[in-house]
Image (cartoon, rainbow, N blue to C red; front, side, top):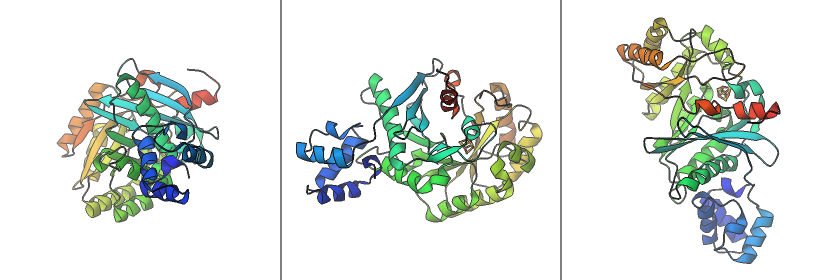
Length: 349
Ligand code: SF4
């Protein structure tokens, strides 16, 4: 396994197996997760012979940044990374009000094919490993530290490429690594997994209660519209998704965040707000209204700020807790999958 995806205990065990005291495992852990090392050779407090041995048996997969763009509007940073097997993944860093949030990918591509999403249009390639998720955070934070050497990540969201619940084991491994006090030390309340509504996996999460926050993409108030936007709705229709969310909230005592991307003329009417009010009645939930970032070649348009505020007011009148999320990185194609798609068409940024 990639050293970046190994727990502290596993690294200690590895060090012992290689004839070193277990505390060497902790040194490696700190180099990876706190000092953001990119190669075993950088770990200068390890004995030279051990470093040589480790770098040939467990080399750290290299960081290769294919593209890096920073929004002139809000400083959002987006990176396109190339993994050793040639797969390309995107990750984004957003800074706002003292928070520094990394938005990570959990898969190269995605099999769910949501119609408004560039990643969904590009198909599925493979699951990412926990180490590859950590590598994205390393890449983003190293960039942030170029401007502020003391920078740290405060929040992690799995809202990049891929459906995290289809790669749950590796995503949970990455989450535990992000929470470790000797490494990233990010509170479980600041780590969010976002799903398109895979019912069996939501139920599994409710029962296993891993410490993290759950966000579910709703995006519509009728099955017709939701199936048009998200083909997965044919397998797990709205009613089942919301039932699973209610179950999750009841069993865990945690609020579910429901993501709702406002799309002009599709899901933004007064009727939609009323229906959403009825669907969510009595549920421990919070609605995040997301401005749909423009995606080239996709026939949907987001709504303006005023319309988003009006829709939020309608939901408040329905007794629903709601926030309007600001659009980030509009000028750098922040919606996931766009850099990769353009790169694969052979166009440069
Ligand atoms: S929105 Fe998420 S789940 Fe849907 S296709 Fe895009 S990456 Fe996959």
